[in-house]
Length: 216
Image (tube, rainbow, N blue to C red; front, side):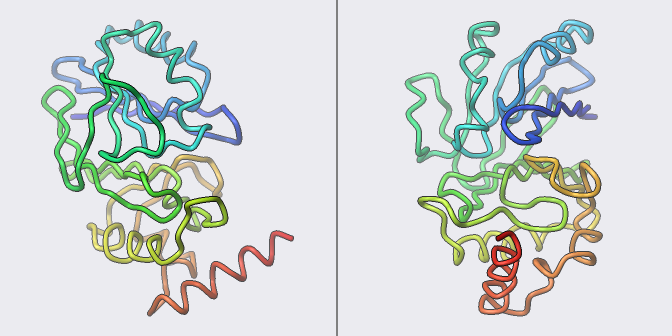
């Protein structure tokens, strides 16, 4: 089985996740968003071998501590969408939509979910029903589409044609702690949020607009 340890910190209640394969102790970090001292401690305590850094998207707060991690673990490979908005150099592994990544004997599927940002990826553990959503889906709402290169139509497609088609018992692990609980099942997220109850794109745009108006 895959183990998950959650760390909160960074720019704005960011989450980083340390995940590892219990059988051979191969590990990956999802998003380099928080100060790495506690993560290093956990890698050492559990005797893990850090192999990959999985990047949900290249907004600065999600790759803030990437160079720190690579300094401590030069063998770890950054992995993210095949057309990143940020240049990671030659060691970067370009992931295509629906590509499988292995963490020891565990498998994750990279799902391209543009909208909040063009290079947004979610990482899905099909066997254990986990989905690491970055800033595409939070507890109670989606990511926002107000920044440069965001696209609300793409986000609608990503939410409704990709994430909401996954098994309803899937547990969402988002990129920020913005909800009443750190993680949530897809089913519960749908039931509590109008963001995930829309019957078409126009309705979704209205829900998003009402949310932005309410922030003012």
